[in-house]
Length: 166
Image (tube, rainbow, N blue to C red):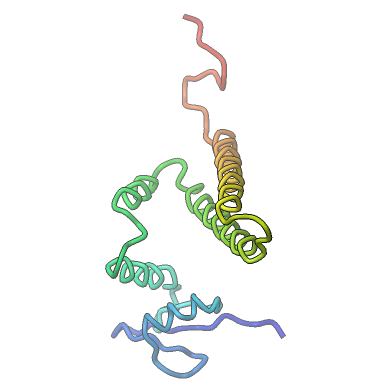
């Protein structure tokens, strides 16, 4: 039997109702669903509109206000600048892939750290860092190559690599 998404209904009074357990839940409990890799959607109880992204952003915002934030003002400003930019459509997938590369490297690092035999942690860390940098560079080059293929040629230009007679 195919597993369906867990539906959380958000009511006008800002309360969240988990239809799976027939109970009201908090944002912290939704955060726990994320940590547990639960597949869910948050829907407006009246209109049915998908509110998942806005609730997740709210959780991030609340956690950014506590402790040490992950998202610096500079990073947030750079993200904002991508809205309306011709490369806006590439930013989300790029960030997702970047984070996935980071998570894969973290998993690999933990695995190697657990199986250290005759190596110092510094050797392993150096090897992993070099591979991580190579993977990061390859991913960035791939993104730039893809972006260069998709970005339209400005009006009046003669195409890539050609020079106007002057």
